[in-house]
Amino acid sequence: MSDDELFAQEMAGVKPLARDARVRLVKEQLSEEQQTGRRLAAEGEETVVNPLVDEGVLPLDPWSILEFKRPGIQNGVYRKLRLGQYQTDARLDLHRLAVKKAREEVFAFIREATELGLRNLLIVHGKGQSGAASDRKAVLKGYVNHWLRELDVVQAFHSAQPAHGGTGSVYVLLRKSSDKKRENRLKYMKGRVQD
Image 1 (spheres, helix red, strand yellow):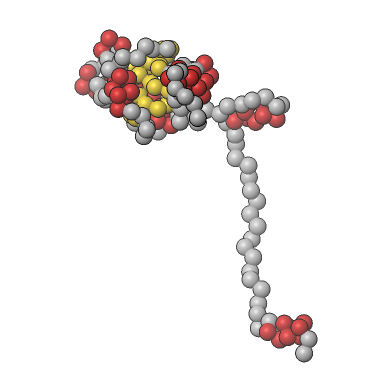
Image 2 (image 1 turned 180 degrees about the vertical axis):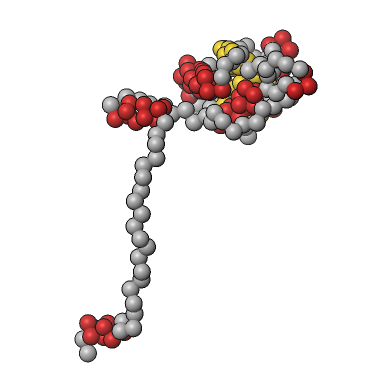
């Protein structure tokens, strides 16, 4: 018996699997920002998409303290940030901005500060809309708290000291640029023998 005949004999009672009906895929509608990003990418220009969300974040109490520290940040560095002992390299004021506009401003501010090699920032988000003290909610504060955690370049942040806006502002510590790391290495290697 040949291989073909043996195969046919073994497959005598086998039925082919049924296929699922084909579904026509419909392209999702792109936002204006996504369309612009795709157009710039097609033209060969660099495009950066803002990953920050602009809806679904709960407002915070105006007096709550924002605090965040990534693993690896030294306690002494975080304490100096918390106490406002670092000189502020740049400041962003978000008072009276809508969430969508504030989202754009925060992303652009952090991106530009990173490109310039800045490390210590102050973002003024305010304590919420004016009104009765009992029902005030800090909408932008909640978003800033969420946004800063989403950005990998942000190493730590903490609500500011009263002299710098208190719970209506936040100190932000960015990751050190490779140039600054190299500069520090050279500064502290003077007089030491390199291997």
